[in-house]
Every structure is written in C-alpha cells, then in structure tokens.
Amino acid sequence: MNAPAFPIGAIPTTVSTGRRKLVNVRQRSLLVAKLRTLWVLGVFVLVGICSLGRITYLGVTGASAHRGELSDALVPDRGEIVDRNGVPLARDFRVYSLWFNPKAMSEGSPLIHTPDEVADGLIRIFPDLDRRELIGKLTAGKPGYLRKSILPEDANKVHALGEPALEYPLETTRFYPQGSMAAHVLGYVDSYGKGQIGMEQAFEGQLTSMEGRTHPSVLSIDFRVQSALEDELNKGMALSQAKGAAGVILDVDTGEVLALASLPSFDPNHVQPGDMMVTSAQAREGDVPHGFNRVTNQVYELGSTFKPITVAAALDAGTLTDLSRRFPAAPLHIAGFTIHDDENLGSSLNIPEMLIHSSNIVAAQIGDELGGARLKKTMESLGMNERPYIELPARGFPIWPSGEWPRLRTMTVSFGHGIAVTPLHLAAAYCAMVNGGIWRPATLRKLDPSSVPAGRRVFTASTSARIRQLLRMIVEYGTGRKADASGFRIGGKTGSAEKPGAGGYRRHSLITTFAAAFPMDKPRYVVVAMMDEPQGTEATSFQRTAAWNAAPVVGRLIPRIGPLLGIMPDETRDIDISDLKPLIPQGASGE
Image (cartoon, rainbow, N blue to C red; front, side, top):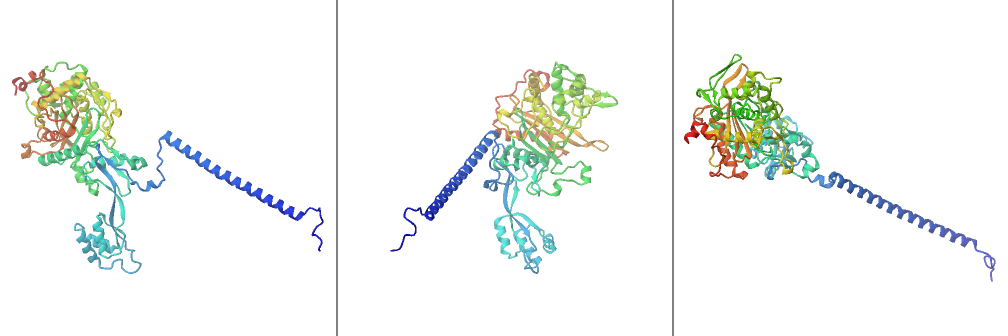
C-alpha cells in the first residue's frame, strides 16, 4: 500500500490556499455588485431629483416644457391668427409647389420632351400660366419655381407628364382663408418666413414661439363686421368714383377694433410688387400703394369732424355755457386770411345750427374764445400729437404745429384745418366724446373685462351727454341725414376738406369723412368712414361732399352690423333732445 501524499496531521496548504482565493473572489464580486447597485440607485435618485427640480421650475415660472420634444415637430412653424369668435384669418398650410430641377437627369437634356411640348402640357393643367415666360424658364437651365401652391390632383397631372425635372415638393405656406379681407390688419409673410406690415409683423415673436404655435392669437376683429365694412366701402367708392376709401369701427368702452379697412386692398396669399410701391408719377398725384394703410398710416386734415371736439372743449372750459347763444355768421378777416362758409347761412347761428349747417365761421369764433392753449391741451389729451395707439407697425405721425398756437392757427384747427391726423385718431376721439369722456387707446387684441385699460378723462360726463345730443341732431336735421337708419339712433358729423398739393390746396381733390356713433341713447360703437377724392356722380346727385358719399356708407353699414353686435332696431327709443329742439327751426316746427 502506498504512503499518503502528506503526513497524517499535516495541514493541506494547497487546498486551504485555493479556498482562501475562492473566498476572496466571492467577497470582491459581492462588493462590486453592491457598488453597482449603489451606482444604479444613485443614478435613479439623481434623475428623480432633476425631474422634481424641473417640475418645480415649470410650476413656479410657468415656462413651457414642450420645446425640444417630439411634439415640436408636429405643430406648425407659425401660429394661427383668429378673429374674436375663433374664425381663422391666417394659418400655416401644407401645399405642393411646382419646381423645375434641371439636374434631375444626370446626363443630357433635363427634359424628355421639348420645352414647347412641356409648356403646352403644363398650360393644359394651369391655363393662366404665361407660355412664353414658361418656355424661357424651361430653356434657361436654372432651378426655380414654375408655380407655387398647387392642388394634389394637379400634382398628379404633372406626374403624368413623365418629366423627372418637374418636381412637386410638399411645402409649408401661409394661407389666408378670407383672401384680401382684413389684409391691412393681418399683413403677410414674406419668402423668408417673416411677417410684414400687419399683425404678422407685430406678433412675429408670439406667432413663432411654442406657446403661439400651439395656441391661436386672438384679434379683436369680428370677421362678419369686417366683411360688411369692406363691402360698403367698396360700394361707396364705386358710387362716387373715389380713388380710395378707409373705415374703422371701435368699441367705445374698450377701444377694441371690430373692423379696420383700407381700400384698394391686396391679397396676402399672392402679394405683388405693385402692391407695396407706386411710381413717382403716381406719388405726385397723391396715390399710395395698395398695401398702405390709410386708417393708421396716412394723415389727413379731417375738416368739420373736428367741430364737435371744439364745442366739447369749450363746454368743459366754461367759455361756452349757453347753446342758444348766437354768433355772427359774416366772413372773418384774420391776419390777411378770410374764414368763410361754402354758402350764406344767415346773419347769425347758435351752437346746434352751427353743427347742423357746419359753419366754419362760428366754429372759428368758439375756438378763438377758447384759446389756443386750451384747445391744444384737449387735442393732446386725445393723443393727436402722437402716432396712433395701435399694435400695427405702420402708424403715421400727425402734422402737429409745435409751440404756442397763434390766433389764426387756433381758429383753423377749430374747424379741422391746420393739423393732420389719421382716421384712427378721430375714431378714438369720438369714443371719448360719447362714452362719458374717457379716452382709451385702440387695440387689435381681444380684451377680457379685467384687462380693459382705465384710460384718461378728457371730457366731463355732462359734456359728453351734450355732445351725444348734438351729434344726434346733426343726423336728424343736418348734413348727416343720409346716415340716418330707422331704429338705430345714429349720431355723427360730416367733414370735407381739400387735399394739400405742391402749390397749396387742391380745390377739386377732397377727403370726405363721416364720424358716427350708435345707438346715441347708450353708445356702444364708433364708426368712421372716409373717401379719398370722390367725384360728383349721378349716384351722389353730382355732389362731392361727405353728406353725399361718406354719410350714406355709414347709413347702409350700421343696419347690417347692428344685429350682429346685439343691437336691434328699436323705433320706440332714442336720446332725448327735446330741450335743444326749440333752438333750430326744423325742430321747432316739427319737420
């Protein structure tokens, strides 16, 4: 029998050493596992802390958590613009475009057929394309658009032509579903994706932010009211053969713009170079581009529409206390100039008669007694020495005489000459005259009741009440009769002023305006309509003044928009003018 490998009682060192090594390996493995577990746990804790911090940050700051997520790719590049009732006015739209790619074929001619044959095929699909221009683009060998915004079925027809060089990429374009309506309010987006001239420019940052891209920007405009305003202004232009027109409708208590129009207009879906510029010859004739906003950017001498402002200022100042007081109506000779009326209105006139017949002579005397300093202060309180308050980028600066107004300047401003402002200035001033005396800035943002600005007081409530009576009398008995609409209790004032030219005033070029409010027993809206160079036509009884062209526009417009705005005709109600009727022959006789 062989002897054992080691003596009895000896310790097998090789086995014990191996076991110790195994123990050490297991311990290290357990330690590594514990460390890995701790690392994983630490990562989870860190992620949890970061997530909790992010949630806390978003909750405190209100910042958006969308940026950078997948949803960013699913929203439009530019946010939607809607009217106050949610009707879409501007939105991004995915459309096909027709693109010529001369490098689509690696060798030889870019076209399979001749340019003439390809052009004929395209014209069968798009009959309005110019054949000569199209052939020129196809033979030039330069890539470019042949047509933008084509329908899917037209893209299929292009595909059927079998020309690889005719591509139809799917692109994002800005679409204005109402066409040219409210074009001067909205503006347009240029080829670089930037907003121009309207709220597209004013809201550029908002529309391209994640918040603006996911939530529509709401305007104060009412699509229905805007449509009616543009329609009636177009009719007025056609009937009087005017070269242009403008109009604006304001909420008297908030300053919200319900409608704003400048004509001729343009289509923001297809802006043409001629929409944004005129020739030098056209500029000399006083023409402006179609894209020019006559309501906010063009300043005018607005004539007799200023006379109620003069009366209101005099009532507040205390220089006019008796509306029955009679003023001489003979021509005034001041500093080498003569102030006169268009016709002989008699030897004297009281205040209601002055407004009804629109006497420059009496208005000048009221302004003279008021004084230049006080009249100027009133105009400044109405914002007429500044650009109009509105979000639009195109805002004209008034022609405003600085310094102390001399006597003649004060007298001419009293009847609307000597300073030039925009129609929006005038609309905001009329809001202050009829709403109890508070001036507020105009706005194109829809306001909730809590965000309506407090405004500033310009006239006392009692003066405002008197002006409402006087404006109603002008429509009932005076130059505003053609604006009267049964049951709507309209009040307002006409204004006709010669346009200035290179050699002085152009006697045969008028700006005619009618500034109105309704209903006069509780005014809610101000409407201003203006015609640029109207002509005497058969439709206007061959007259060119505001009583025959601008006033009828308002008379047709208010019955259309009143019911849309919750104002129904009511012949049983009206503002009480019984205390003023005896001051005018028509009122005293009941005519």
